[in-house]
Length: 166
Image (cartoon, rainbow, N blue to C red; front, side, top):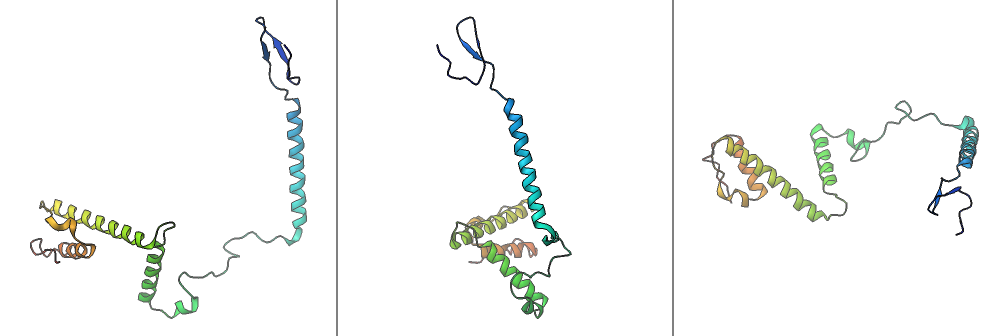
């Protein structure tokens, strides 16, 4: 038999098999040191070429005034606190309705379902605390009807008066 691997050393075993003792790693350390030296030289060159032109590190002291979300800074100054709150609420709703890869209609349906589930959970908890059964048609009610019912129940006008309105 002929050995094709000339770089590694082999030992012939008693059974006629050939056992490799391992690869030659004597050049690995030399190569690693050479590559490290080259990287250090490149880094020194890059630092020296930047020289005095280098900018100060970014930080809070060098930051500008920035901009506020939702419009021009001059238009924002003339608004009342309530108008600013409404604008920020509208901007938040627009951001919530923009989900990547999902149509706007589907996002609205998902939000409606989330709201309905949340309201049904609140109502179920309320009725459980009062040790009463939930009204039968509650699961089929719309989000608006559930909101109205929750407000009625929450204000404690009495569960007898809190009847779903079609």
